[in-house]
Amino acid sequence: MLAVNSGIDPLLKRPFSIHRRLGGDFQILYRVTGKGTAILSKRCLGDILEVVGPLGKGFPVKTTRDKIILVAGGVGIAPIFALAEEIKMKKPLLFYGARTKDEALCLNELKSLGIKPVISTDDGSLGAKDNIVNVLKDFLSHNSVGARLPRPYSQLLTLNPSPVTRHVIYACGPEPMLRALSLLAKEYNLKGYIALEQNMACGIGACLGCVVKTKEGYKRVCKEGPVFPIEEVVWE
Ligand SMILES: Cc1cc2nc3c(=O)[nH]c(=O)nc-3n(C[C@H](O)[C@H](O)[C@H](O)COP(=O)(O)OP(=O)(O)OC[C@H]3O[C@@H](n4cnc5c(N)ncnc54)[C@H](O)[C@@H]3O)c2cc1C
Ligand code: FES
Image (tube, rainbow, N blue to C red; front, side):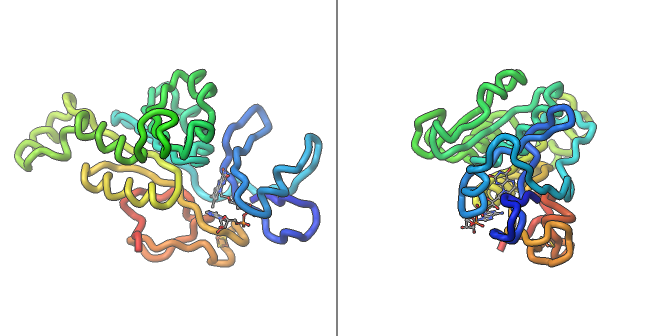
């Protein structure tokens, strides 16, 4: 939670993901969407801003033989990049959707991690002219077998999983993207984790202003999240 100003206007801190950790420092990557981020964009080198954090729960990186698929939409690349940097040795696949070529960020930095993202843009100025969930769906339809086989075969594959490519998803992006991704994960029986966004006031679990509905009741995005298992979130 970052105070964009030293005064009381705006009163509330704004939530941001940790984009990169560089020694003892960290970077955020943000899009100007309103008053707070507009003020932030005017801050200068050497300005001191109040920060509370790190808060909440990040992406769990488990020991898994599953192939990791990262999915980022727009400025959702901010935390997905941090994750990619952490798990680059696992050679994750990255599907990255942006509105335009100019809004596809961090491409050189991803290259330096050895990650070549599959990109789509709304206007077709870079990569496929499609939304990134459709692009991922197309990939899965050619590369994921276990989930779509009839039952007896699925059981066989559980006994001997080695020839099967299984995937686990980690995603951050706009709500419609995450919603569509949840349906896709269900269709392909994939596990995964999604980072949600909600307007936040306190950021520390006290005001209940950021709750989302989950299969286990309402949960606070700032405290129990922002990352939730993909199958846990109830979309309304
Ligand atoms: C856990 C978390 C991590 C985030 N990480 C990043 C990040 O790394 N980079 C980044 O650019 N943004 C991130 N955001 C979104 C960011 O917090 C908002 O864009 C920011 O608070 C907007 O502040 P503002 O004063 O500029 O806009 P406001 O004037 O408060 O709002 C402008 C518009 O943006 C919408 N908005 C405000 N807050 C959010 C929000 N949290 N989610 C969706 N829409 C919102 C408002 O409804 C309004 O339409 C994150 C949000 C959360 C909850
Ligand atoms: S922002 Fe106050 S409980 Fe989450």
